[in-house]
Picture 1 (tube, rainbow, N blue to C red):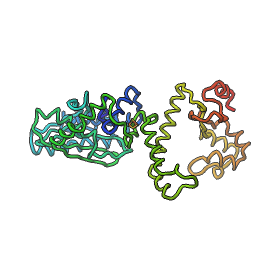
Picture 2 (picture 1 turned 180 degrees about the vertical axis):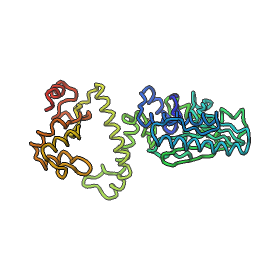
Picture 3 (picture 1 turned 120 degrees about the vertical axis):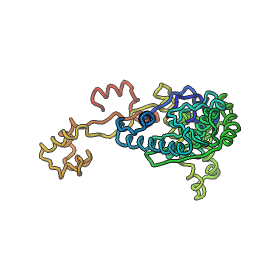
Picture 4 (picture 1 turned 180 degrees about the horizontal axis):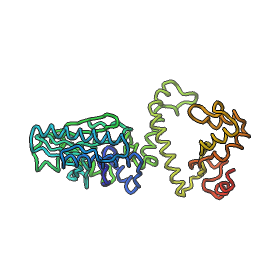
Length: 382
Ligand code: SF4
């Protein structure tokens, strides 16, 4: 379940364990949310209801409504998986326990560190922490996953005084891509990792100290667009190809050296551009640059209306349709004639506002949201 953010959150742990100053650099910057995150929250709420209902009644209820069929199926299969793990432990000891939405406190090692275990099962000699992941964009592996390990350590610390388990098993259940991944730890292994690795890094992170180290973990860092270390790493990696040493054309060897680093360089350059655009929209002026309305394409806003209007003018489906859809605007213009088509289609076609874009000042387009743009809009555009 997504947690409320602690300064050193489990979900960002991969980042602050690798780049300890990142937590301080990101602090106070707003969280961004997405449709995917909202969907994940809904799925977790539904899964929680289904499991609690089973715990109370011993029956798998079908009375809970889901946003869609996929969510219904996925939360059913997650519930069944949790019940299956629980029943396996129950077969070993009748004292086995199933807890839903448990706070897992790992603040013994990380100041204010906590997470929420979607399902925790306390068995005979094994404690299970099951994490439902509703996303499907990235396959999540339990092995080596620092968030899962912190949850495991939190569960170990929360229940270790009361129960006599020696092992902790973390389960990642990611139903939309049929991914079930598990990792096993002994209590000793987790203790050691938390003491030797996590605690010292958390102490640095909380003070904003340590090495600012770029890597895969920059991808979701809030300062990825304006981070000096990331810019340096990318420009250094380009220099290492040796391109600056001699004039002329790139050698095959230099291209081979450049190819593996291009994805990261492109991603960093886009992040930097986005950061500059966001700042410019906040009113920051970058010398030689301005914000303009980006390009956009014409769109048919009322397709049935346009089809009817074209039929009235006796244009058949053989001319205007590309099965089962209306032809593109460009093709319709070609077939009917630009002027005639514009006369018929004007009421049904529009041009969405282009996204703001940062461009050199020499660009001919007027500044975004300037009086000129507003005036042009009132006149129906230039
Ligand atoms: S962008 Fe990368 S290097 Fe920079 S602070 Fe964030 S995690 Fe560290």
